[in-house]
Length: 113
Ligand code: DGP
Image (cartoon, rainbow, N blue to C red; front, side):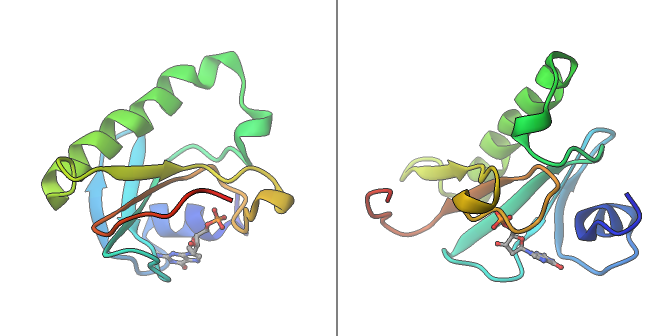
């Protein structure tokens, strides 16, 4: 998607602090971190949101979680615990319409709400 900011980051057209990349996934630090570790794990394929995912996307979405787990260990937050968030749709707070998993950790989280 030519006007998608995450597609541009994945292509390297916009600078980002990348922490992981493979054939299917790119992970980079959030520009507006809300925790000491705040990483976005993003499929290289453009998918607007979880709401338009199809069954064929299941391995890809599962891979996001495996990468999240590995990054949590690398960041040293696995033992203390971490939060994984996928905002879906405007009312959830999704602002970038390219599926992404937030990996948040390094501080005590409050209850969701
Ligand atoms: P969400 O609200 O779930 O759609 O999260 C979008 C996140 O993307 C938000 O925490 C800020 C982050 N973000 C937006 N633009 C950029 C950017 O250009 N670079 C980086 N690294 N993060 C961005």
